[in-house]
Length: 446
Image 1 (cartoon, rainbow, N blue to C red):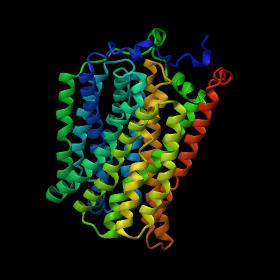
Image 2: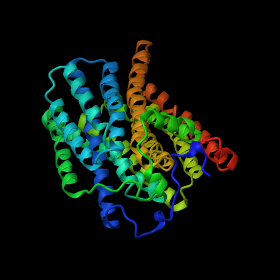
Image 3: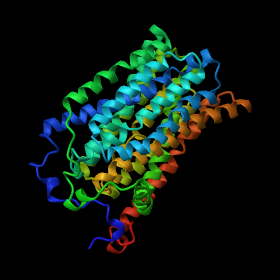
Image 4: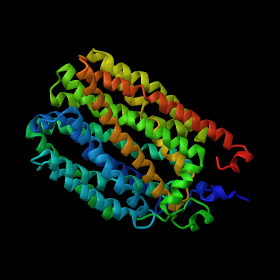
């Protein structure tokens, strides 16, 4: 009999391996849904990250300090994201997810355009907060839809596709932001960035069907009702492997978002690159390698097996290798070395994302996944997107006050080394996964 502490975990059934079972369509349709939701994630991060490249003209117009810039790109977005994320995650377990996602895309795209109308720093913060709140519902909706569109064994590789979106969004936002800002100013760049989301939302409403929940899970798992948020949180904390995996993902997110947020500013300040060129370089050294690393991790998971201990070792190794590479990129003092360091860092530091999300999804019941994924994404964004950029900005201001000639570069490099902590946490989660393989450990909830 299954232990009580495991009551909300999924037990794979034969249906996952039955090619006749599909989530509302054949393989071609499922791939269409996958790539359409990938583009939702691209737009999500395009509208979120385009402001990173526009920091310098915004700073000059509103006379802002680095700390205020860090707050604008960090907590002004991340705190509303976190506050809205839990209700949206619970909603994703209870409503038509495709309509929810489409409506939210329309809302945040609209506020992206409104950001371009801001005439004060306070107005820009308010618009930024509205974008964060609306975007909070996209990740749990997307993750929940895909978990009912593809079987358990495919999820590590499948989840690597939408989670390329942040880096393609960064790439697109860097190129679009630099080009559009050079031609139309930072306000015009925000107006242009709002258009693709409106079109994509219409396409979702017209072409995507809501998948049946739990189609690849056992009958018992499908019959479980959507639990309250407190029960989902208790589930995540009770299972050591799930808990340590989430802690590792949050720590890695602090590093990934904090470092990437300041790369374009570093290129402009330290190496004198103009805005458009800094955007192009950021796209090439952070966005494209990041997407490639996420895709490569999915390929490794599909090619060499997706057992938990293997996936956790992959995640830990990747972020551990990335840490000194990011340090090199920041502290190099030479543009060619900075490009090499940040490019390799961007590739390795993103390999944890797809496998990481699949690890906790495979442990959760169908009507728990929306809420659980929301909690994970909220933690990564509130702590990662909120604390990462702010840490770099605050350390930079402190080092500048102490007379450091390269405070921003040194602040970015110090944060990059924090990736070693994330690597250790992934390896601790792997040790828990190995222990939980024994029957005695299973009964203890590991």
